[in-house]
Image (cartoon, rainbow, N blue to C red; front, side, top):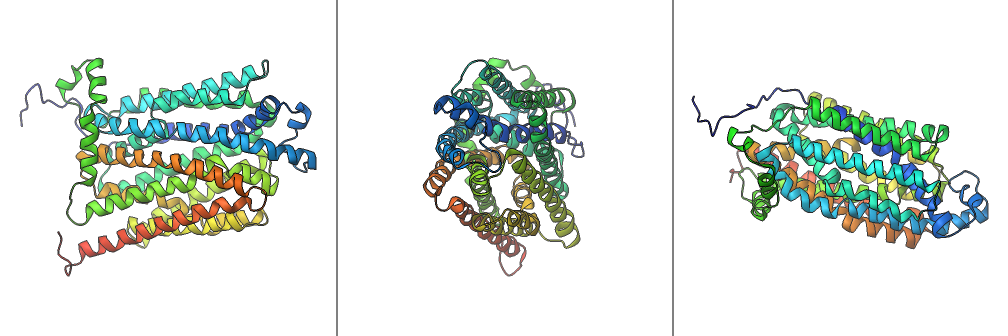
Length: 474
């Protein structure tokens, strides 16, 4: 069939095109995990030496095993200050990216996913480069740890994890069929967990052999490699028509910030769909948002909790994080290829199992008395790793291809809004119960995961009703 020059597609879609995003996602989350505990430790040290003006020799003992009563008292003074800085980090990675993603999603449906991927990866690289510079300067000049909040700006302005993962999942939906989509999303999550595992295993080792500045420099270098990979190896997945290649950069930027695109995104998410698809999509979105809300404790207070309750150092925390990642990978593979391909369970049923495991794991953290109980919980509830990819899979399977960008943009924006409530709530709860019940914050996570489980079960019921001839499709 002939088409005009204006409508000619320059890159016709290829459904079986391989997805090349596993490597950059691996590198990014390696950088994240190799640097996060070290950054928390560095903020604690600088808060102790600069903000509280404590003795440097005492501050250097923070985070080590067998701390003296004086050092434990100093730790109790430093932790609330550190928690406030980490809360600001969490908020900066949620508020602006959540709003920005509502514009970026529909824009990428028109002008492509690759420009957005390049922007978000570059933002992370710049943030890590700034953290490296600030940490290096702190060895020569006393610097208040609040300076690190400035380094969060580039990643926030480029959309942070919210826009990045939204675009990545859109890319997968573009290049995969409905049958293979769940497996591809689980494979991407496996790559993500693999990066986290490598970062966790190497973080304390690199820190012990070098210093914090070197750790941050390695993390920044890893993300710069990810930027190069996206630029050179990742092909555009959205069919771009010839007339859109003639649009100038200024016009594309004006299209990015059109309010009607946001209105259209929201309308698309809430419009009526047959076979209960609207309810399925919205419940999936709420479940993913709840998952992010409950996991916010890891970014704000979980490491502080482990230091306080079990006297863990960075080395012990990174070993635990690595172990958790291994079981998450095993759980994702078991859930995808065991429960899905062998037992034939639906994506929603597998997601429900994952959320139930998350619920039980959160209770185990809240009630743990000895550290081995945390490892036992990781083993028993490894299937928690399937909740996220299977939820995204059943959302994608209920969404028309032309709406992928809008649906995933709305989903990621909703997820990014969760830290606005979660970060202050977890910080307040932890600071309020620090002296008598440090693990109380995990009961919040348990309640949220319980809600996610109920939503996934409801999706299973709706899907069975839409297939049952006794229930007419409306």
